[in-house]
Amino acid sequence: MTPETLPDGIAILDFGGQYCHLIARRVREMNVYSEILPSDATRAELESFGSVMNVKGVIFSGSPSSVKAEDALILDPNILEMGVPVLGLCYGIQLIAEMHGGELAKAREYGMTKAYIDEPVGVLEGLDACEQVWMSHGDTVFEAPEGFRVMAHTDRAPVAAMRHDEKQIWGLQWHPEVVHTERGGEMLRNYVFNVCGCEPNWRPLDRVEEAIRTIKDAVGDGKAIIALSGGVDSSVAAALAGKALEGNLMAVHVDHGLMREKEPAEVEAAFKDRGLNLVVVDARGRFLRRLEGVVDPEEKRKIIGEEFIRVFEEEARRFGVEYLIQGTIYPDRIESGLTRNSETIKTHHNVGGLPLQMMFKEVIDPLGDLYKDEVRGLGERLGLPEEIVWRQPFPGPGLAVRIIGPITEAKLEALRKADAIVCAEVEAHPFRDRLWQYFAVMTNTKTTGVKGDERAYGWTIAVRLVESVDAMTASFSKAPWEVLERISNRIGNEVPGVTKVVYDITHKPPSTIEWE
Image (tube, rainbow, N blue to C red):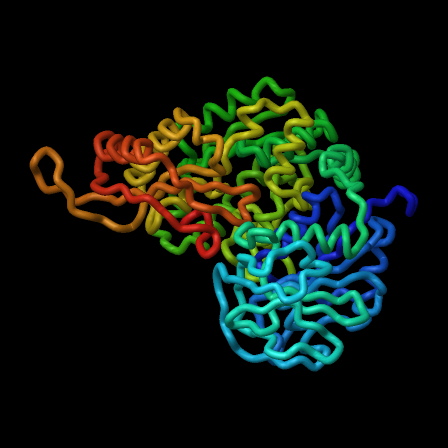
């Protein structure tokens, strides 16, 4: 592409905050390209992206660390002299203040907070005198550096937003990228369009041809195997790989014994006539033997990740395959802590759970830079059936991470029945269209109940229904009481061994969507 045809873009420096990829997501929602780079990227590295995008601005993400720590993450100061607007968020504003001689101290602020807007200009243009924002920080800027103006404050943060008098350097202590900051989208739009002057000239659906080309270039004349779970991510990845490789692709669906009710048969029926070389592997026994007695969820994920690879390797040897293709997406990668300096929230079996030694020349993730809704858009562009494109997410480790504590056949059978009841009752009601995910969890708590006038001592099932756009943040659903009552009654009556049903009313953050 020539400079005239390149999309305008925002570079995002990742200091390890869990919302870094959400910042990129919000920018791309505006049809402006974004690229994430490690926090120690140099000015020269940022300028090298001139062959990919017209860099019109740079955002510094949050971080789990402190700018006062001995091993604090630092910034190439030359980036501040690039001549493009800079926006520091959370750790970003603290880092800017520290580099310019501002005063910082410990003052924790977490959750929804009222910010008082002192100067509604630039990034804060058009905002009211008081706005609801989302805070998550331990350090606070108490005095702005020389040459900076305070734009907003809170009860605990005297410098909640600031800007340089002459240079295009801006900082916000709160997170505009999360939905809990009510007008955060407006703040980011102010920065992207009004401050940086970007044009909305990038379309994520254009990624179809790019992804196909990426797979072709990586595999060449070789053969590849695609891990096909039947979820939207792996299905879209399979469709792209099928177009790229045609007869040189084998799709493998592994039945690890941790699937939902009737799921393996449904996956086989959905894909057997779609032109893929589909193989369904019954690996239930080997997975359950490896997981016997395992309690720690991270250990479960790593065991499942390794066993998946071993199954794929066995099938690959039969087919003469050297490459593995997966449906890994952005949230998988950030939650697995694979971005430099980022915290591991939970290891995804097909990212951080992969064994270090594998027979494959390369693992290809054609969707690795996309979010769920963008992947759904690609699925529609590729002509996949609606029931696949809009299927609710399901974790790769399956019910293993929805059973708290040791996994047994009895627990699996009870959870499958409970989960099927949740799905049936939700999908029979119009409010299902608001939901991102809905499922049951087998807790490790047993409680006393009464069944048939006799004392019963059995499992507690938790029900989780959440609303979200991209899984990076989520809200528990205020589901109709009659639906929750039917779910509870049916589980109590139809699932042996269950004596109590509870409803999870925790948002993400501070929780995750899954329990483990």
